[in-house]
Length: 548
Image (cartoon, rainbow, N blue to C red; front, side, top):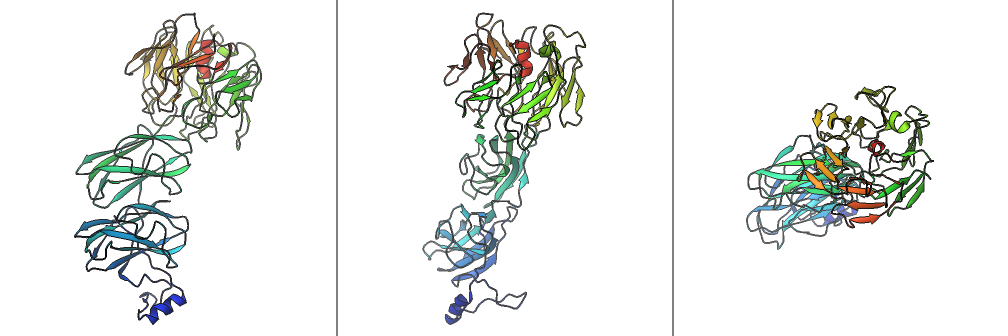
């Protein structure tokens, strides 16, 4: 694949040596002046080469033994260049090297082989790539390509929602394609590359915003893979044929994974964690620190990633004042009034906090649901107030009839407003299916991404039998938990192992034990009677009837 050419700048002394050797310095036709750069005197050909992925590979030929070709391109300090040289005919074993603007041998080694490689530049100016046969005796044709990996040009833009269209592309011999997408540090993606026609064996790799090779390996294969990102900014996926000579068509799909609840360290998995309402303390298993004082008696925990750094922030909502307190909220305010103060029966009639990413900016938005009116209030939303729910007026019953269950049910990267009607077992999703029957009276809604497709699945837990029902699941019915009043099991689904799917799990309030299906360990004691498990949304907890 193509190489980059650049002219080498030589100082006056170098030009003097060239003149003494009988080598005429090149003349710039545009200015009729001797340029400050010159390629190595051994080069038979000097050609500028593009650094955009849209530029086709440059074809060249080593016509006679001992010939060397040079290609020049501009570079800056810290630029990262992807260099690929591919033989196309003849008994040629192509090797190449980079030459700095000052004429010294560049990074990536001297004659580093006829293969692709990433090279970090360390001088500003016009660089050169020199191509020759490994023995000096071979001849034949080749292609050379040089592509800038930091702030790459000529790339397509990949959508990152489950519903975004596939990116379809085609590769000629020696080509590489690229697609960019925006992400935050600690985001997790699933990348899928599939060949659709031709003798193509597609391979791909991720490139960080700074141009360095990303996680999941270099050219990690034409398959889907989950990758944990570690930089914020515009990422790139580069696609090529495994040998460089194959051609054909392919598709690329990038999906940002849903962030698991209770991910307090940004590791991509939910931690076993509890809030002690009697003392206002957060306890995070394995956390640093493990115990955090944040809140007072009566506060309800509402942890979520409010600042978009990939880490769940410890936060509480104070029903008596309608205030939100978010620890480490900087640069945003730590205390935010948003909700109606409640004096009595707050768990049933007061505003219910429902933080979620309603606008798709990868940050949890402050929001409340008002059960008395069936209204949703989303801070900074457009619109800010949305009517979606029947409302119970001034006579809210002893148990809620409608539970807010926001989630990304259509996979577009934004949380949808949704209601679960406890009396009929129906799900109402704003803008989506409404009145979906899934559940019976007494079932508890436990929406989550159980199959790893980055969409929220409709699901319920039946406390009377300890059974889980996941709509469309395989299997749909799973027994996990002890039914009845013996053990007081509470559903706490979350991605506890970082596998990209919500794990079925229960928290046993009577003993403070966590049971995670398939977990390692499966049973872990963490909590005390009265503690609130933090992977269970507060809106659902109001129905579970914790003492708060």
